[in-house]
Image (cartoon, rainbow, N blue to C red; front, side, top):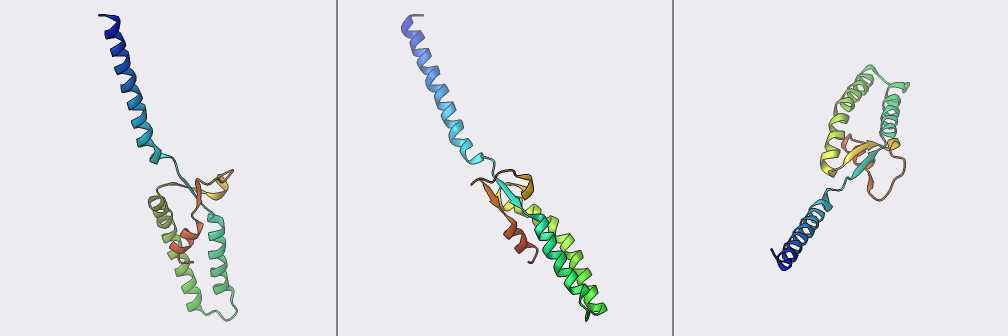
Length: 120
């Protein structure tokens, strides 16, 4: 093989390598990790206040208390499903808000969406 053949092989390998790296970069841009956070403690506190208002009311009847217990049980069933659907809808990893040390533009607050899903 001559020096010209070696230069052609080197050029072909360089073009193929750069093409592969460029294709990888192009295809992997959309695969960046996205993070969503929820303030689950505040959602629990708000629901707890709603239930305690219903039960602790001096004029509350047994029917009102039964409704409050049924609402609490319904909330306990819908919350895990709502959290699971958040991850699917946003296409992101959902973390508790206090698990994220610094929030950047890539971190999306999903608490309002969670509140809507659980009927708040």
